[in-house]
Length: 120
Figure (cartoon, rainbow, N blue to C red):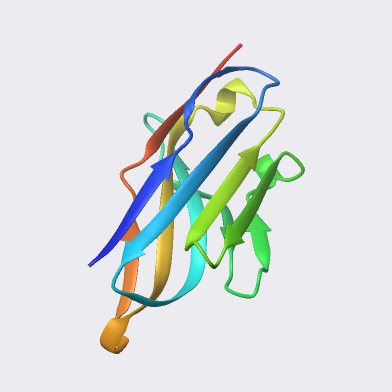
């Protein structure tokens, strides 16, 4: 079993900043990709940012220049620094972690989500 837990969401005014954290734990041999997704009411879940094991990153066009994804491989943790937040960033943010479990089985695990609300 691999557990994924997010933290750091909350309410912030437009223009403000928040930092999300996501830690993976359990029977992990190695972690490959880590990413942040979000889902607003009535919308599909969408990729916000992703980071590979080697540190390569990708971002949704809507957050480029405002959000930064990073990871600490020693802690199996991924971060999302969000700046210049806009009301349209309001959503539940989910962390996704992909890798290999002990004994060689692949996994892809989701966190329970953390709410981010940006007021205008």
